[in-house]
Length: 493
Figure 1 (tube, rainbow, N blue to C red):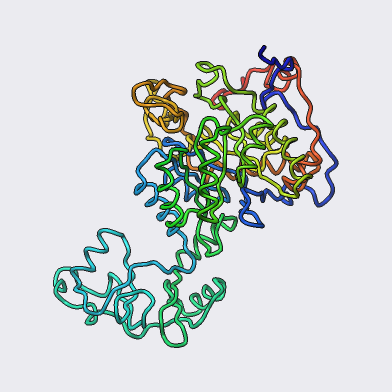
Figure 2 (figure 1 turned 45 degrees about the horizontal axis):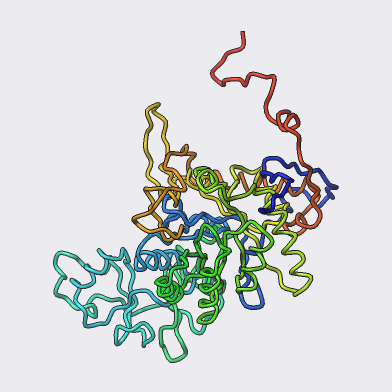
């Protein structure tokens, strides 16, 4: 006979966090939102803010991945594209703010200006080191920019005739701060770094420094490049995708599956762990058994959530899923027991059921280390969906689920073209503006919540937060009631 659990599952919306003692140094500006994304060997990849944009076609493209990383989070590029397209986007994100760059286009002195013009048109690059062979790691002999030649008269002229040879450079510099200091001292926007023998090692651009100054909490790797993740499926052909993504510099792989408690997922995790040191995130799961299964398979973090996305119909068509509050409580307890047994800490990613800062705070208090969101990020200008105007004249953004007919992401749901059925819908979400204008306020709200709870870090929130289930009447009291909101256009009589 089927086992029936008598206690109902609960949504994040049913919880409230009780206040704790806030010390003099515990106010919102002193709260740190640095958190662990996933294990990486004996350490962790950390984010400065606990945000991940979902691996959805309508949400995460290059613009979202770059923007969110600049604000301390990370974007996860969806699997529903070709391997070449996904890898190209990883490269774009990694090269956007690269600190010490080692893979920029380099010219040889014998190339024609016509070739340089073609490179500029294709890549948008306008500054080029010139080495003896044209290979990056060779003796630097000059610099050529788009201002050093006339594109109408110099097409047949060689690079050597137009390049600058009085190049100012740094020698054997390994710290980005030292390179930036020298670049500022020299008044240059571009600084080559050479070895003692004059071999080009790296280059630094002033624009990279400017970006860093504007966004000091960027999520960056050891080479000062923005972090970016990418999704793969459990299908055997995605072993090649995983390897290509790793070779192109992806920081973390996410297995994109509606149900993570499967042998297919275990096989893919084990394959990745056997062939690389790149972290892999498993999921999605909602039970103790699912968590232990993925951890035992080698997952470096686990995504929690099923059937609770804003446009997800999984629970309606398959009756599988669970309230996110209950899922996080059970999986969080399982994680706690696992840590006591093994000494290993496995970060949890709350995926779904989060519509605003209140649900974000509750999810973090219930054990989530980071928050993966689709609808929330789809509303920003930087999301991948197109801007449109609806029948009411309002500006909206397209938004569709990976389980929708539009996405047709069959690989995620273990379906075939012949028997595909929808587990999500297509629609629109309000356009709220740029992520750079709106997300900082959300970050401030989270800090304020932690401060009120008497916590200075997400780790303290996990251990010290006190939450309480709310009755339907209590939830009604927590909303605006018994008042008509004032319209700013109304006048006092």
